[in-house]
Structure formats: C-alpha cells, structure tokens
Image 1 (tube, rainbow, N blue to C red):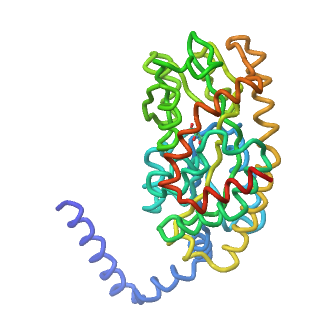
Image 2 (cartoon, rainbow, N blue to C red; image 1 turned 45 degrees about the horizontal axis):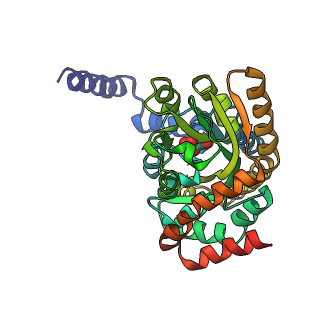
Length: 349
Ligand code: LMR
C-alpha cells in the first residue's frame, strides 16, 4: 500500500513539474532510449557455465580455456561466467537448471544422462575402451553422433564430448585386486544403471551420491569405496579418506557439454559460430591435456604417502573383465544391437 502511494506521488510530481516547467514527458523517455550504455548492456550475452569439479581438473581447465576463447573472439560481447565445484548447482540439479535456462552451459559426466537417454549407457560399459584413441573414435564416430541426435530432440543441445580419463577404484582397509575383494563393500556411484550393474557383478552394494558428497560419505564411513579418475581423487582429496588406490582403468569418465536450446536459438548466427568454433578448440585442448593432468595428479597422489597404490597386472585385469562380462548382455537391451556392434568395431580394430 505504502509503495503504491509513493509511486503515485512520484508520477503526480512528474506531471506537475512538466506542467509548471513546460517540458514534454515523451522527450524525457526518448532521451533514455538513446543512452549508449543501456544499448551496450542489452547486447552483452552472459553464459553461466556450471560444473561440479575443481578448477584444476581437465573439465575445470577446459571451461576456462573455452571462456577465454569466446571472450577474446567476441571482444567481450559474450562473456562466460564459470561456477566450479558445484557452487551454483550440484550434479543432481544442474540438468534441471539448464532446462529452465537458469544456467546456459553444463558439462555432466555422460553417465548422468543415462536415465533419460539410455543409449548413453554404452559409454559406461566396464572395459569398453582400452585406449584413449578408442574413446575418441566413439565420441567422434557413429556412437557419438547417434547419442547427440537422440539428445538434440530435447531442450538440451549437445555441443560436444569432453575428455577426462580412465576410472580407478579406491577403498578403505582392503585393497581391490581380485573381484572377490569387492564382496560386502559399499561404493558411491553415479546415476548410471551400467555402473550399478558393474558393482552388482562384483557383489558389492552401492549408494547413488552426488560427486561433492563423496568425501564426507567416505569420511563418516557410510561408503567404503568409490571409483573416479586420479584428477578427481586428488583435487577432491578423496585419498585422505581412503587406504588403497587400484589402477584398474576399468571404465572411462567423459563429459557431454550441453547448452539450453532456446538460449542457443536466440543468439545471432555470428555468436553461434564463434561459440561453436571455440567449443571445438576447447575440445581439442581437453583431449590433448586431460591425459597429462591425470598423470600429474597420480604423481601427486604418490607423493602424499597417504594411500597405497596398486597396479593390476594383465592376468588380474583379465579376471576382472571376465567377472564383468554379464554387464554387456544386460546392457544391450537398453543400448540396442547396432550401437553395441559399433563398439565392437572400434575395439576390434
Ligand atoms: C562424478 O560424479 O564422479 C564425476 O562425474 C564428477 C565429474 O564431473 O567429473
């Protein structure tokens, strides 16, 4: 009520002043419309880029690279604000935030799209890839194109696949060298049915937990194991709560960069082109630098002395592969025969 009275008073005094001093109110409004700064502000586009990892991980560094390229190539008319470490949204709510355009870019692990887009499960299959080159072929070939096409029917537009690295296992008290070591253990997992089946095949139980809740759940011993890349294990200090790290390379963790479809359509052709080429360059950058970042963090883990590091030999790895074989048969029903054949082709080459 009081606000209404104040507004009325303000309008009345404006009209009275116009009457007394003889100036035209329409001129005043027009003068404001010609304010250069106002026009400049309207033209600036802000991309809020939200992600959950540390700034020093492959994803954190690539997001920074992408922001620099976009800002430089658009002379600052498009700016990219990065929110790392889940500062704005965690992995459980960032997709909804993107769909509602509260943020304009996210880069979730592909595993986090599997419930809505079952085809993405193929990328989580244990031992699906035995080299970085095979991962690249999947992302850039028929598998990547098929998954992107599936996604692009929605409010989320896929901009490209980003790389992190191979996942390793960590555990409390017992080292994980043989499938039987997993029995009765409780792991944190990402929301992917394949990952759930992977742990079931090893007779371990799991809880679905956000990435940034892993440390505290290990700390209070609600879970006693988890899987991740060495860059995530190091930067989130998970090694402080774990006794053993097994270099198993049993799965690959990569990302899909997503933008909001309506936001994208409202950009100019020139802005879209610059953002797309900057994304291609940042993708190439992360592809080349993700390996060395994970290697550097593995060296740091060795230096901490607080976790014992074990490497699976070929024979041990073969036993893990055998134990995980049933996951393939169960997953084909969700992914389809064609994509499974594509994966076979990549890995047989
Ligand atoms: C995880 O949840 O473990 C990862 O997806 C975190 C990330 O984004 O690398």
